[in-house]
Length: 419
Image (cartoon, rainbow, N blue to C red):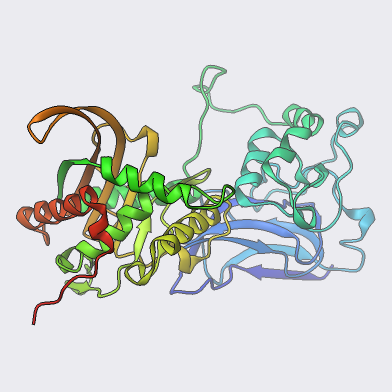
């Protein structure tokens, strides 16, 4: 037997360890070179790790949720002759729960049960981490699913066509060994992106004294402009939302309030003020909240901002966003769209010092020019780091943003610089 020990790779940016998110191979499986074997996550990004060699898995290190240090053994392969031959490929799902590193190779399933498992195809299965997770939760063997995406990539809708695989996998799931787990409850281990979100949100709320400020904005004229601009676009073009207009207005406002376009370096005790405005767009994805970044938003036109937001949001939702597209924002905008409610208290995306939230825009009666009129009203809910942004400055900034949004033509008028 010839063994190959694959160690946790250095994933860059000073990474010292990585969390196991999901194993796609287990002791006893035969894998081919470049086949996905494990998904890991650092504090910076999620990474799919392929097999460096072809061979049979002898042992693995860590279960989902465990952290493995860079340079420590991650998986051991038998790379002897015939170890990864087609005849040796294990037909049982490679997305099944894995045994501990010290466990021996699992015994073959009884013939009647194994007969229910469709034949697995060889080679790497192409699917996003989100779809791999859905398959794991549904007990679907991805190697038996025919992908309809480019290059045979498995899409979300493809998972609905594999009920037989799901049923057979469900039959092979172990019974929980905890007495307090029953059919009435279920347990979900907090790992991967969800764990990272939980840690960052807790740290931000614990360490940052949030100052919340809510202001209502009459967006009647903004809505009129938005509808007019949409009518001027081709019928098949994406519709313009409020978000790009708010981003455009925000970049203009920050010229007068640079203390809100700041990152706090806690280790050095330094506020890093940025000239460029890199706007984070809080985006809900199947894997949790991500914040892709529109870089140098102050130098972009309206349609460029709108296109960048759509492109980045789609890449984030499909797990195609790169690390560079998900880090480096200097201020964040968040919106729940039609679910925006009346007001909210968004949590600051540390190390930033400010976040602007868009609430739901609705028509309601208000006093306008001395008379009751139906106007379209939207609240802005913002949070600021009170250590570095005074309440007066925060309120003044939101009032300036309100002024631009209520008179949207002024968003596009160049600012006259004083001599």
